Each structure stands twice: as C-alpha cells, then as structure tokens.
Length: 239
Length: 108
Image 1 (cartoon, chains in turn purple, blue):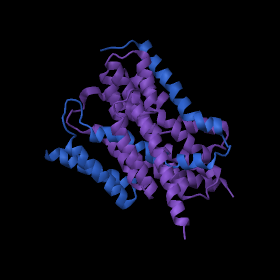
Image 2 (cartoon, chains in turn yellow, orange):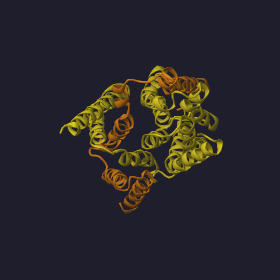
Image 3 (tube, chains in turn brown, blue):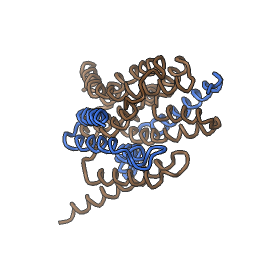
Image 4 (cartoon, chains in turn green, purple):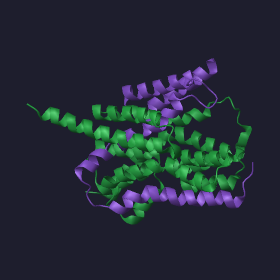
C-alpha cells in the first residue's frame, strides 16, 4: 500500500541520500560560474545556462569551445556528445520509472544528473520491492537538494568571477565526486569487469572526435558486464 | 574574448533542447513497455560503464602542457576509489579523496 505519509517518508529518505552530493555539486556549480564569467558571460547568462541545461560537464565543454572560437555547430554537437550518457541513463531508468505519468517523466528527464541517477538506480536495485510511487518519490528526493544549489552556486561563481585564487584545486572536486560513486558500484565480478573495460576503452579511444571515445568505451563495458554476468550465472548453475 | 548575447543564448537554447531530448528519449518512448531480458542485462551496467570512463582521461592522461599525469591527482583518485570499495559509501569516499587532495596540495 502507498499511503501519502509513506511516499513522503521515501521522498525524505531520497533527500537525505542526495544531500551529501552537495559537496560535489556546490563546487562544480562554482567552477562553472567562474569559468563562464571569465569567458565573458554575465550573471544572467551563466544562470540561464545552468537552469536550462543542468549538466556541468557539457556546459564547461561548451564554454571552453566557445573561447577557442569553435563554430556554433561544433560547440553544440560536442557538448551534446558529452551528454550522450544521459540517453543511457534514460534507458536504464525506464524499467523503474517508465510507467509514471508523462509529466512526471518529463520532470524526471529535466532533473537527470549523474549523482542522483546513480544513487537512485543503486537504491532501486537493492530494494526491488519498491512501488512506482515510492521510486518516483525517492528519485525526486535525491535531486531536490541538488538543483537549487546548482543554480545558486553558478550565480555565486559568476559574481566572484576570477577573484578566486588559482592555486585552490577546486577543479578536482568534480572528478573526486564521480570517483566516489565507483567503489560502491563494484558489487560483482561483472561490475568490476565493466568498470575496467570502461577505463581502458576511454583511454584507448580518447583520440576519437566529439567525445565518441566515451560512448564506444561505455558500449563495450556494458557488453562486458552482461557477458560476465551470463557466464557467472552459467557457472553457478553447473553441478 | 566577448560573445554576442545572441550567440550565447543560441548555444543555451540548442543545448537545452538537445539535452532534454537525450534525457527524455527512452523514458518517454518506452514508457511502461517491458524491455527484453538482454536489454535489461546490458542496462544494469550503465553507471559502471559510463562513470569510470568519463573520469579516466582526466586522471590517467597528462594535462595540457604536461608530460606525465599529476601524482597528487592519481593519489587522491586511488584513495577515493579504495575508500569507496572499503566503506561501500560514496560520502566517506568523497571526504577521504577531498582530504587527500587538499592535504597533498598544501604539502607540495
């Protein structure tokens, strides 16, 4: 049964699980605001970018390419290539959240960020008894603390501009935040194999244009994970 | 370098539309139709197939103008993943990685 109070509890549980990611999203938003201001964006343009797109890596890529004088088509397609992973996230959320009403799915899509996505899928996999309203509530819970702070820190970063001293290693907060997600994900041999292929593939194909290296590496890694899972299951089934 | 407001807003609007389309794609089209088992098996590995690869070049490849990867970053990255494996908790991993990063930066 899904009583409103239970759904509310699940929402706040998601909120609590999402809140620590502020440690990442805050500095990330600040970095973007500073970089955008340095590139000549005013505060409203930086904020508009963060509100309309909510994808730090793609936004940084776009600003970087603009300052390099890349043509509009290259700027947009490269930044979208950085976001190709979102289509994979969308596919992997569909079995969990695909039955939600379309307005909820649209909102889920707009608010899809790496950390909240990874946290939600991990939680759904660990708790297969969750109902659809609970899953939706949990997902919205995890993103709720994140996106207002993303907007706010973009504004602060844009206002601070280049007044932040260069020797503060604020940029590395972003990789740390992503790397922190990896350890808890490595639950089985199949997950470890997939992660390994992902890293090796991304390095081997890093020369491919438009960030396609990551896309190729991710497809290979997913195939590896699925193959190792099948192989492990068959081995266990043997007498 | 200054950009015209028209160029900036064009980039923002195109990226907003494109990114939403990518995010909505499968959620919107598949809806509640059940995916085949092989597809579900592949999709289970999406996060672990994307996130390590997303970060690998920044950690293992030298930064522009450098010849070797930064040892401080390598160390902080290794500690972050190790603490994540050990505690099974992303938050502790993040705190440990950030502490190592700040500590080593102050020392060097």
